[in-house]
Length: 341
Image: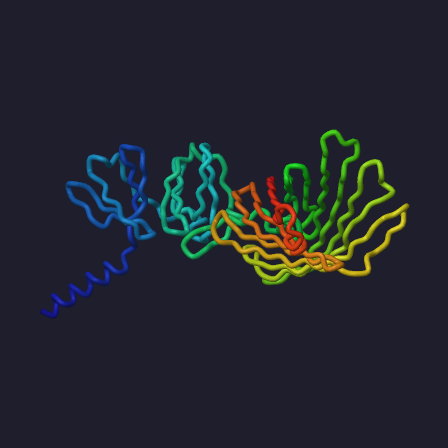
């Protein structure tokens, strides 16, 4: 009896300390499964992947089986590095690599789903950047998170980032970050049939950016071609609180004018309060509200749709003065397209 109990205990110890054998199973229809065989008989096998998913594979569907050398498993998986793999047909996959060889890469997403990608179908492969991990799924970052409708946040663009935008069809602009602190923007409004074109240039610097706060300042200057001796602009500083997906910004600005080569600064400030609330992988809500000298107020609410490179802002602007006058439609439509590259 004692010998029997000793044998049982020894067997349990062996089972518990034995390292699981990981197999790679290729099927006749071209699929590949990586995992541990937990059940096998004459009809087929049941395979459990490292994420806990189980697959039953019929014996007549198995093309080949081989033991996976643990040393050959991806270092990316061991270090939990998220990779982004884009295939030749335009699909993108983000996750950690469970296994790879010269033929396939097996990727596990944050939600636990596994994808077997033939190497021949991979167009690009890189460490995943500009993403936000949300519990069991991944969100792409809003590519336009340094701007509201027009007003800037205090967040900085990354060095080399650039985008072009078109507002209300007529107003076109281009922005570029020269480093991780400073960015510049320029734009124009080509009016069909007009010989004079409104143009502007702007610059913004992020003086400090922490985990929940950022502080920036900048200037805007605009003029009209043919009248370069005159112009107007804004000097501003802003403070943003929050992260890139949920934030609010307060801006304090002073307007100025250029008349016959002389600059004159406004006596009263222009205050802007703006906010952004991310609600899904592709949608954010935006509000931008301006309090101009003289009691003029403009309020707005809009929705932003975005993909990996393109954002579309649809909003409405209104003012208490427009509503009280009761003449015309008290809502000004706003449509903006931005493409980041």
